Image 1: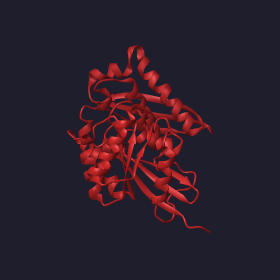
Image 2: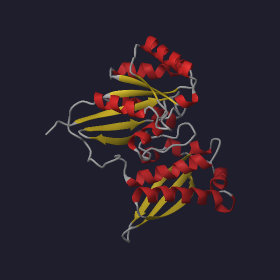
Image 3: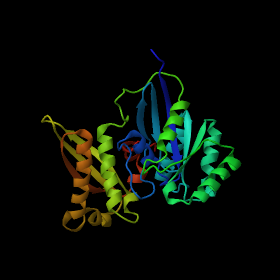
Image 4: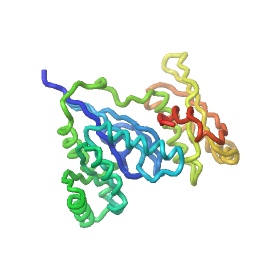
Length: 295
């Protein structure tokens, strides 16, 4: 019987570089939530990719940025921990951005001593000449030659990247079953889906001042699930905005999230949402633990 391989691959980058989209594309399903807003990913999301005798645990991480708040610091810490955990570090770069904006990512990756590959994402939105210049600049400045050009959203160039990653995975026993996709509990994935919809439908600073808490999961009847969640917000005057006129926005969020959860579980789902105000939630440890973060 042929030996198996297993390894961790950390996906790091600036906010909105396309890390979550890339992981979802490689896995062929949605494990990490995605919105056009920066800092959508708050926790480390593990996605399991299995191909023949090789199993890869991708670590999707929050974007690395200059932290200002306690929550910011907790999110950046997740990304830095993932680098230390990894057998390979993939630096995801939005090819539309300047290379100088990413210098700290290369520093973090190089200091880890782990093998590194660079992924230039969103190449479909970038001039070819600029891409070649960017790749040459990375190679010259950081002495890295494993550089891939992809569009994670359109799944272009991702096959070559996956082949490279699989070839870098060390021998070892698998840590997950063949059909596993993530180590996240179902209730955590359900709260993430709801937060994704809130990020998509709300604007300005409001999404960054909320979190979604799991309350109850009831499966009294086979094939039917009732899920109760709390949307925790910082300010009383945000409550009306989250609810929307005549409750229209919260209904929109509930139905969209319910649809995604139903698709995940392949069961009938009834989702119940309650909006509560906790002005100081960002300074209380229990809310960090609920999001998979260190306080």
